[in-house]
Length: 388
Image (tube, rainbow, N blue to C red):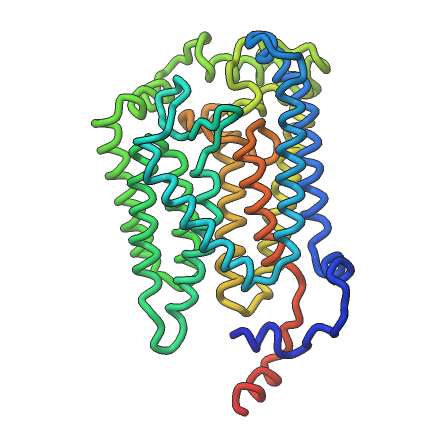
């Protein structure tokens, strides 16, 4: 399959990397990512100041850290997007192995920071959440396995990828982090479907997820508490969901004004999990629609480019990465408007968080690499080359 993508029109010798990258990259998606980060800094100026005050830190402590980690994330995104798909696959596999080992040792060396879920490693000067880095690596590994199963005498890659997804979900559930587990399983299901899986099998897997959720509800107090809060007929106004719902109602269409919002003084996670509530309260529905449009631009343009891709690995990996990016944003915003129970999941490139920003840069960099324009040739030329 490599000849299909690269053999028809080889790159010119001595062609500089930057001009070639700029000609082939999806500039609309790239611009949308930078706009999302700029909006995140704008919202961070409002949402993180109260938290810094409560913690006895300088007013813009968290904004400065967001700028630093965001710069690292965006720089990583650009560098990764310049790589070849083969190099991205190698890096993805290696990164997955490191992240998977880190997930395995979380119950022993991890910390929960008082939030009831052991998801982080404390580094003294900060923390790292390995599940954020696991997601892009898992997509790459699964796409590689599923693509390999299409080859003649290839390995049973679909089965291996499914077993790998289940193992990861078990480790994530032990934290517990059911939101990330569902995201991993969903992204795998999309790749499996694109790779030619029967629809009935996917329905069976969905039933397995429902069964797993029932078991988790019966055995995890952390999970049951969030589900009960979500299903309650009335939202307690003193909870995070209550504060977020009230902020969204107060914002209306145009918002209450820059810096005039009150939810940031009540929500402990206003700068991370509930950043969209700050946006809705201070800037109204208009900014929320702009954010939705930016995410839609990245996902829709990526899928449109991937539809023309003939290399199975690139097509599967790009689809899985786009799905992971889109569903994470959807889950975060759905929690704020009470369409889903609280998940503890950040809004990509908008929420505060070093792990989220850097891992998001890696994920979108891989996606931009997969969606770069490549000479595809026509089927007649491909068949002619294949018969030689």
